[in-house]
Amino acid sequence: MDVSRFALPRLPLSRIQGIVGLAAGLLSIAGFLFSATQTYLGAAPGSGEVVTLVRDAKSDRAVSDATVEILTPDNAIVTTVKPDASGAARYSLKEGPYRVRVTHPRYAAEVRQVQVSSGQRAEVRVSIRPSTRGGSGSPFEQAGRAVDEGFGTLKRVFTQ
Image (cartoon, rainbow, N blue to C red; front, side, top):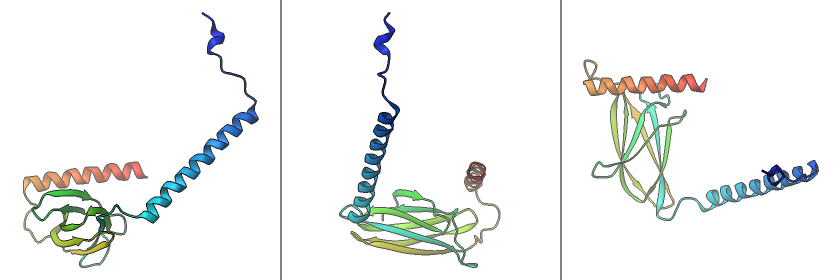
C-alpha cells in the first residue's frame, strides 16, 4: 500500500494562518449579517411577543422558578417557559388571543388573558401569592414538587 497517496500537502505556516484568518473573518461577517437581520427585521409577519413578569405579591421580588404556560383560549398548551432571573418570561407567538397561566409549588396559580398583535409586545404582570391550601397537596402535586426540586438541585450543581 502506497502511504504517499494519503499524505497532506506541505503548506507553509503563513499560508495556513492566512486560510484560518480568512475563514474566521467570513464567519464573523456571516454572524453579523444574521444578527442584524434578526434585530432589524424583527418577528415574523403576523406574530408578536408575550412578556410575562412574575413577582411575589408580598415582597415584590422576582420569582424566577415559576412555570409560565401559554395556552389557547380552549386551554391547549402552546408552550411552557421559565422566567429569567428578573422574573421575565418571553415568547414569540402568532397574533391572536391567549391565556397565560403562572404556577409554582408554593404559590397559588394565576391566569391572565392576553391579546397578541402583529409586531407588538404584550406585557403581562402577574403577582403571585403564597398558596392557602391546607396540607401538602395531592400526590401528583407532591411528585411535581419533588421533580422540580431535583431539577433545581442539578441545575445548581452544574452552574456553580
